[in-house]
Length: 325
Image (cartoon, rainbow, N blue to C red; front, side, top):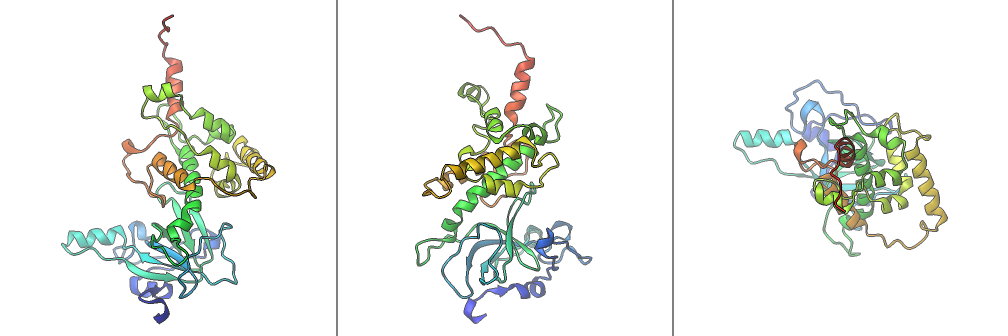
């Protein structure tokens, strides 16, 4: 790998880290066939390969100019795109080293060639953007922050997709929350019968309610970004739940938003939207890192996007004090 420096090639990862190979990404998440020692290096809980990459960037082989992930999710076959970065050791492997009083293993520089596509994993825990090859998926964590010749870092190039991913993530959290107070396993049904704008209005509290219930979320998701990116959101929410079909009000509302955005000429106009501000607000709203991981797994610390519904129901059940005239 003289041209690529100290990077380990994907073909060598299975030999060096004993990673099992997976099925083609085009068939969905790789099915892992692994019957050996689950404490093997690189194997996380349940025998799943832990392939998380940080400080990543996209470039042509041996190149230095950064490239953004393609908007259409699939790479052009005629283009050779490499994913460079540092493969993180699995948490299990780190804990084993610490328990034995050893230094935690360091990151391994890798280059992943022959990228096929990227995809959003909608899982609550493994939420994130994943880079797929014919053999495996790799979760993309922190992009490389180094500025190169054109003055842009991979982090800079990734901001727009980061904001769009965060929007999808906010909506997924909104749909999949459960409520003991309302005896609901999820809020899919509640939002499926509403348009996106109606759901946004339903979950946006007044200033008075925010003062009375400071734990409320000020805004459930970025409606202005959704108006611009309804097509993207629709594509990445497709099939997420049986209530979300083309005939449900939420999906029809997304289609109407996409049509209205095109009719307004917004798709062709200069894009001055502040994607970074939208991304940061979405991540604060969800209690997640920019790459989708939860900042805390404790239930008490998780924001409840649908809490306003519980508050409204409770207030409707409780007699209100008459206001002074």
